[in-house]
Length: 504
Image 1: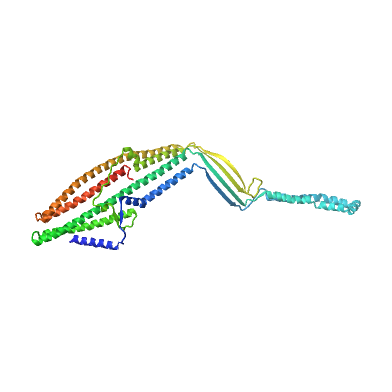
Image 2: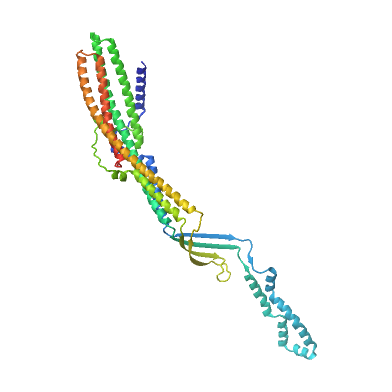
């Protein structure tokens, strides 16, 4: 009774999901279609691709270190006061030098003129001569001495420097000549890092392909089991009708009838479960391929009568595996990166040499006296840095970098052994899967013959219904194992191709 309720509930749920789902065109997908869409839409692969792009940018950044760097600087500064090279007292003295001399001259000339004017004869001569009167007037007002004031004031201005607004600018060109091999090591590391990012992308692509294949063949397996279950349900329904007739004729008991009904209910419940499993598996595949979850898809191998095993004949050697397996190539690149880190650690304690050139502009400038004009000049030079002693810091850093490099070499050797072990494991899995396929093929043939004979015997009333039910169950199980064995062979070959680095 419980199984009947569950069966009806699942049937109603399936019906509601079908009614709620929009009608869309059915899409037939091949295994390669699924692989391509999964590779295109996988978010982790997009992240890995961006890491490859980042590594490419790092490579360009490292390459730029070979070329000179050009930089420009500019500054402006406002000062509250100007610079004054002389004190206020001295500035005042220089500014009034003419007035001071004028006072000294007048102190000498005025008494002399008064003595002349007291002489009647000289007084008469002076009063009768306009020229002498003009000369005496000029002696009281010496124009040349008055000009000295202006000159003194101009001189004093030159001792006051206008530094209230200061401007300065500089363009610098720096070119490394020798950096202890650091630049070359960084460029090698950047190249290895880019190759490493590409290898990691390849590894993730192979993981996506394996996951897609697994989901694809799981759907194919469930779809074939759904066909088997449908056939099994039809057989039980036919058998149920026949048992009903035999019961009516008195050739079978009600116990036989109930036994068949129970088997039929269980088979119908199994059919609903398989149908839901197919639907959910297709949703998972759609999510991996970037399709809407409610897409109506059908797989190319799903519609075939039997699962076809592609021909596999991979030829490989241990060297091929070492060269093709992306995980091993990644470890090799990591080892090379850490080898270059040893060179970088060593370069920090080697001399560095660079040439430089500057062009500097200032305002105020002092190249032609002091003037508030923009004036510039250039300079060229060589700078060298030679580390002398760091109390063993360089030695220990180099030793540490060598230890890190050695760690990755050991990891590489260990991974090589694990890879070869994995390859041997998958080779054995293929042989085991092929043997299982041979056995299940024979078992399926026997189950079909057994079912045929049991059906004939039941129809003739020579064997009970329980024997026919057992034959039908054995037939369904044999077919299911046969399908799984074929898919196991396909997936085992896929795993082997991945392990030898030939899963493209």
